[in-house]
Image (cartoon, rainbow, N blue to C red; front, side, top):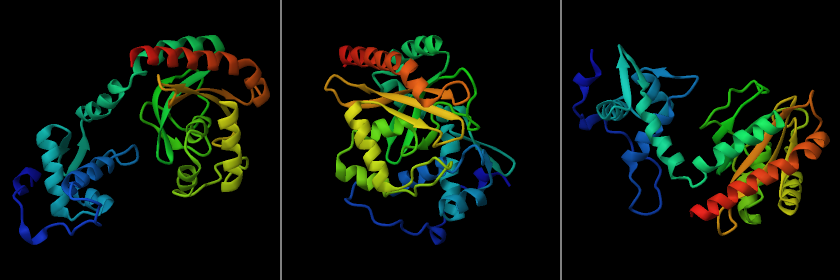
Length: 274
């Protein structure tokens, strides 16, 4: 049966209320719509109505109404019983990227930096406990993870994450480190909360971070902050390299200065733009 033929609401199968949110301005149906969009990912690019309902905690009727609304708006398409997102969904993320003052400023600087050091270069912002990639200039494939714009990684064990975590006050940092499990991705990963706070305090003091094979074996990354006109850190820029080509000390010696210069150039351009 075509899902569109089942679009009329049925009061008997209304979705139970979600947990209360502060204030009357919380739009529950909108939150449910976003949860349906987030249910699709690299592991689940196509899903049935039952799959979406199970992934989101919605009833089949509730998930159906949201999927059909997204289909009407062009964000979802169907093939038989399967639903999938359409390229139009990229409009939502692109709206964020184009609203960022350093989006079109940082890219040529990062391309020049990558060409100079012959390593991959990326930029990311902090979203709670994770970093989100907003720019990437790859050279060598040095990770098993296929990183692209929109990719997320844990902040606590990445160099860009530590640069961004270093901007938080002590109470917020403590809450952020406690908001998600601290997994040991490699034998080198620092998972002790107190030790992480000491490392992040050092990053705050020195103004840059390096992570040596804590996220993935063989991966070393060094990062510096990008600031706005007010001096507030709005993003981080990194250079990633392979431990077989350069040690952490060699990366600091060879790459820290050009990285900081590139981050400073972007910061200055952002300051002029904003």
